Picture 1 (cartoon, rainbow, N blue to C red):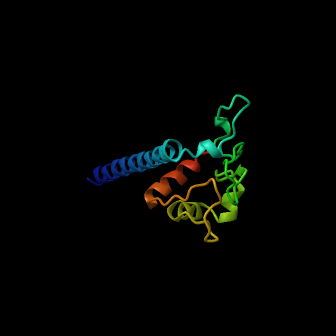
Picture 2 (cartoon, rainbow, N blue to C red; picture 1 turned 120 degrees about the vertical axis):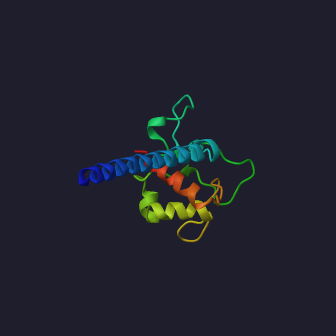
Picture 3 (cartoon, rainbow, N blue to C red; picture 1 turned 45 degrees about the vertical axis):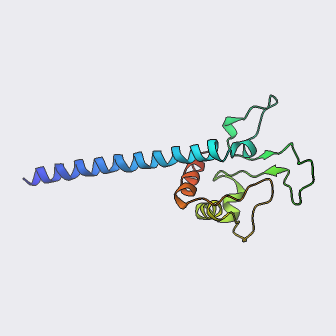
Length: 139
């Protein structure tokens, strides 16, 4: 009987581990979808090659923005930052939670919005967490 309880417990833990892993993978997939298909983050944060194609091996590593508005916009940024965990932005802002808070509030840790052309997103926590989970998978 004791062996049966042990084996049952082990099976339950194994299944729970699979569910947690699947939930984590779903969160990353949702984050990728939100970042790439909805937010189009790669359009500004991923470098392009000489043909204008995104350099996927450098996904979200920052980019020189070769466009400006016709009418001048104050504080327009000519570059976008590396938004991967290896980038200085994560360290300067204080890590994962700061990135989540930014996506939820549209405000940097200093309490100011990011400069244009960055839009001020105001996401639900679960969506912000999903995007950050995806960004954490990028090298």
